[in-house]
Length: 427
Image 1 (cartoon, one colour):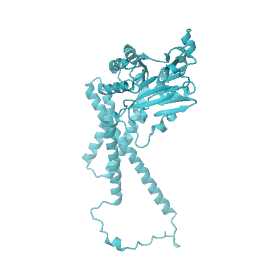
Image 2 (cartoon, rainbow, N blue to C red):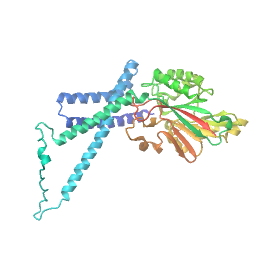
Image 3 (cartoon, rainbow, N blue to C red):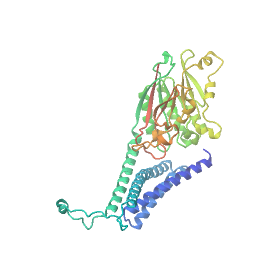
Image 4 (cartoon, helix red, strand yellow):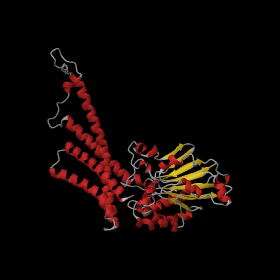
């Protein structure tokens, strides 16, 4: 990502977060009559949490790494609470606005008396039951003030509890998904060939050695023939490349066909050259618009890997034609590969619009399954194609989108548990 694009992204993010924080602060002020000191305390905590997200990354080389990680995680967690709470408060604002609009419309179209005055509603007739009800306490809050406090309290309760769940439990709720896939043209010799997909590891701020050991164990349980790493292996720090290399080296013995990797957008942010060097030095294969054959010329599958779409900003990016050409060698293997069934590794599922109809299966990640989904999944509407998690079909091709293993932004997952996928190819 160029410096200009990165700056624009940061400014837009800060603008949105700033607006949501101001909205939450207005609700706090409206719901509770806090002292000036308390209001200043809330403001300071919110603005410091935003600053921590930015400055924690910028100061990563100036302060101890563990301290920088703690600063970033704390700021991001507070801001996740703010975003979730603000979402519910905005819904409450819409509800109140619609209620006020309905009241104004009723007043406007209310029948008028001959003299021009609106018809007054008849006085309510007291019943024995109502007379028996106790009179409201003088200390009772007015109805609107009580409603305001109830709405704000509910929003903050949902925001706080969901943030704690996503941070403490949701992002560690790892699972091993199973995907049997009937690949047209698959040779009988490869019936049952198993790919274990690990995507969006994001080694860095939130994913370290404890999480990598869990990923390793899940891959061991998958008993794969081949392990595929579908991008975003690092978060954004090239200094983590050595740890990536050690991780990949441990994975190699877990699959008889070894490990294959492709790039993701965060690998470009960290430095795709460093990522490729770490992967290949560990004995794995990095496919950058390249392909290889699983099996042999008489009974094989073309496994293709393309670069991430973010590479197009620097003149590169995914190139399926180039990956196919890499298999067209003069020998018998190359001549046979043109008719082989194709499995494509591509980090960003948006590329499915271009690959559909040309491959049997595309395996992707990138979306994190939306990462934070409270009842609804906004990513279904926001991401190109609406390809967020699971299987999709288009023009005779299938796409599988892995929810990813790590996190980006806030260290939380809600309604999108991290996964390793066991893909079994069948005839």
